[in-house]
Length: 243
Image (cartoon, rainbow, N blue to C red; front, side, top):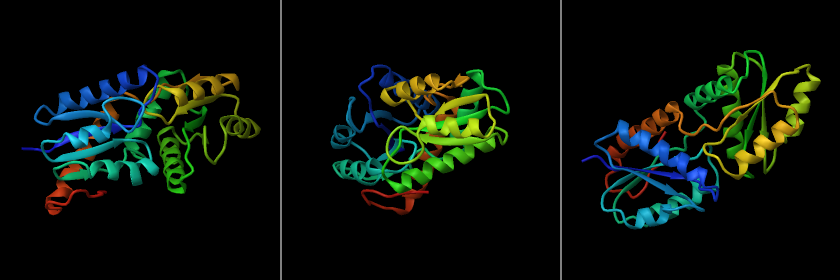
């Protein structure tokens, strides 16, 4: 029997956030009919990851629906996973990954962005330097999928360029059409803020969050399968990090 797949998203108070995550989880479940696929959240939404781990009745593979490393990945998730009475293997967070970049490029085109438009990729931001590295790698991956047009990475919190500064930099370089790509998985506070600021500063197109894009579901499945295969050598270890 295959271990269950426990997805864990950040969580948000915005009602549409869990709706989007639930839709993504259902996509994954439809494609993996022989695996029990479970939805959970770090905070701000239910069911909580901690409660899902405490009630585990079988081994689990945890796939963080997070786009970079950070405190949740390095501290919160391992602590909660240890509450499971059964073995747990934790996959890498979703990002950065070329599939996310491909999904973001499709979202941009769907929003009306054109080849050659400059792009500001907006992330939530973090004070963790490793998270910042992940985000900049994601920006380079998006630039490769966007045909080489410049992609500036901006953050809504923590260190790094603000959205306004990123757009100003691109305009100084002569770009008159600038699209915004949210490096965010679900609607919520950060997605709304990214959209508002981008429109205020004259973005010509504002893409949707990555959300329920089929490539995101594909990546969740790949993370699960990679972690499950790696767990063969883990034995009864309670937790393992995989490539």
